[in-house]
Image 1 (spheres, helix red, strand yellow):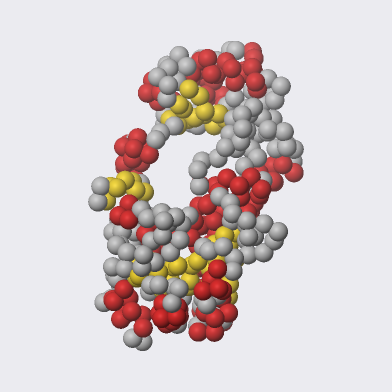
Image 2 (cartoon, rainbow, N blue to C red; image 1 turned 180 degrees about the horizontal axis):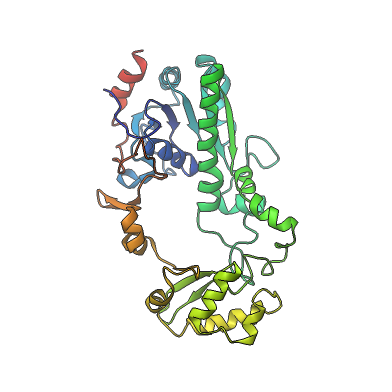
Length: 370
């Protein structure tokens, strides 16, 4: 059986040890772009395992084999697959893969060109490396959570996006692809240590640039993007929300014109942090006078830097998102289509979610006959 994925990564073989969180999303990203990603699933799920089954969007486009890694036979099966793949993805706590007999040294001995991708929250070493944690903990420690949320309220970031996906999955994917490029040039594989604390801290560098100029400070609510009234979300008359991000003066000027506030002397001090709390209250009162749809009619599509705050179902139906085909429903499940987009090697629509062990025989035939 020839794998028929579409996209720029056709021909790439990736072995993924089944897990939760950012590692499977990394595998999904590679599968979306055409890689043949094979997930090594457990033969039987334990009580604490979360089995999403046909709802596991993170497994779309992959092939699944069922292996018992607690047996020597199962371990040897995985090592045979390792011999014929470009990369391996694992998201276990440090030391687990070594105890299974599938650590980097063993796998690289079988395949010197292998790029061994390791996904953790705290990293492979350090005082916290063996501690449990989740997205919120990692971005709290890395500094990435500090400016999240509204001033005066407890910091809070969108669930799983900043840490697990942004600082984890995306950095592991980039690391794997960089490692594969190097392996193809040198014939030598390596280990990629992708830690969420590393990636989410790295994502701060733009803000740290602004911090070095004084535009961001360590006091929440007094920095360029976490305190101004013109960079906030507001509740509308119908209880729904909108977002305003009129950072640049020309956009701020247009926003005030649209809101009928051009001649308001207080708004002439839009960039004075001392005025921000009062101006925020004024905006809050103003935006609460109309529904979200009414504000969309006035502001959407202009340079006032406006957007409604939508839930995923609303987002999928929004004219802009629909025109770009950002979302689709496959087998009754709403999901975002592959991204980014490629002109010469398009990725196509989302592919199916495999059943556990569905491809065991065909994968072993494809990968182990060579």
